[in-house]
Image (tube, rainbow, N blue to C red; front, side, top):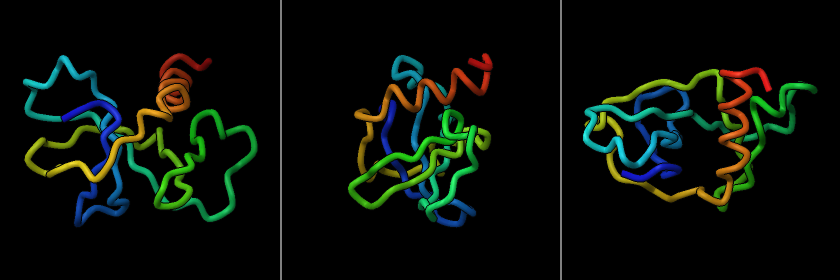
Length: 101
């Protein structure tokens, strides 16, 4: 498992997840993930730093940073892609969530 890998997790309200956990913590039994949902054309003004729209090959998706959480590795499965090219936006959203800047 690698940081910024994408996973489809069936049975979840928002099944597309991005792994944001540091690679060197791979021995843990869980991974920290952030759900992504398909962009519907609307994001509240002022919230785009927290919930950026990411342009993915499968369409534009909103990073739901406030819904960050942990999933057991056994529930995640195999990656369906990697979005390391959005590293700066994802990291900035996490920093904004925890630090406020």
